[in-house]
Length: 524
Image (tube, rainbow, N blue to C red; front, top):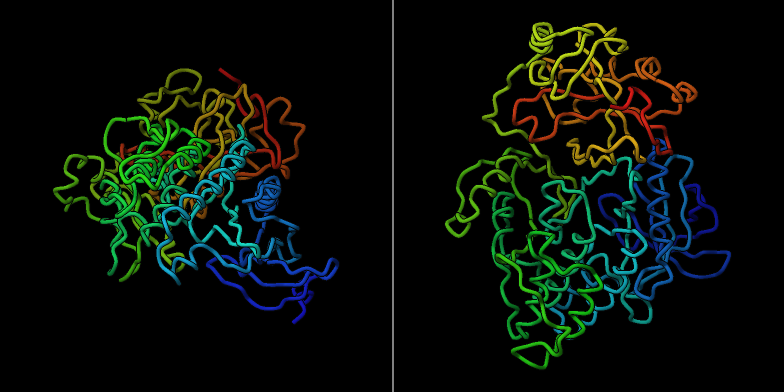
């Protein structure tokens, strides 16, 4: 068939190379230059300018690294008229390391070590350019026509410059190789890539990812508990090799090898011919407190998503029982595809009480605590911050108890995972994307900290509207038309919700720009 039928001229499809949850990869001829390429068509639609900008950032991230000998080159990219993005990549007819692992079994330790050195060098170059990969695994390391390995699929790449990320969804993770902090919705860092690469190298030698059973399947509760188990030595391989991988997979990012370059150098210095030690001072792995633990992949079976119990912690994990119980108690799993790809949703514990569970309760508290000028103190009003009704357009929306914060509130980039938001407060005097323009109690019939559910509530839509935003602007913001703003909602965080805080914020950003200063309230 001719690929022009889907809207991309200049390519002739030969065959389908593979399909995943979000994309199909074709072998295609690039007609203008007469070469074979891999054409990756995403099944998702980029419906907004923000989505398109994010895709272009990802393409830029991959393009910046195409010159590295161990990064799969990106030749071209774009978005079809129907909103579907595509990328044209270097063809790697050897498939992925994941394919080979499945077909042929474990790699020789020396080969896996050398692959690790090469990919760690590519990763060090990516980090130096400000790019994170975030999904390193055997399936994303490709073999080109000359037998060279290259890191591919920067589809989850982030460029973590201050205030640059507006929102990043992480609905699809690979639990077998994801760092432990990914399950806690921590912001992605280079340390997470270091962890994932070390887990990948371990899997190449071991034949399966760390702690993965030879047979059977695991529930999510056991996956989380197994994160606390020590990483076994690789049989028949120098303990120094495993020691390097342990250090790179320390559960606390601060305890890991400090960079991809450090992992590269430590692997290169290991003498695999010596059964007891690595060669040279460069192989030494600094000691850290505590034990090292590995992540765990998972094959899910059974019924649809359910909340998990907070009990049944095996004796081997009792030393860390408090941490494990909290994690297990707030995680649910939703199926988003096959091959062990899952989405994690952080939910409030079932036993959490819901004080002040409706607008009337908040309004009553606010009224009884009000002082002059309409400003109330957070501890009395239940909003978590001082708020005011004076000169506040949010108050005109009937029935929602909308208010304004007394001083400007600014926020950094949002990370949204299955509707659960992770976002950090930012200083308004530095560049930032988001700012609060209204604050209100959660609707009485919408007590949730899940953004995906909250944004569809009619009361939330009335409050977090372009009309309220337009009336809330101050100073230079009056020169920026309402159509240039992107509006979003920040629900209470998991810890805030568990503590009984039932407050949501309407936030906005100027599309495609960063701001310095406050658009909606005076700075403190």
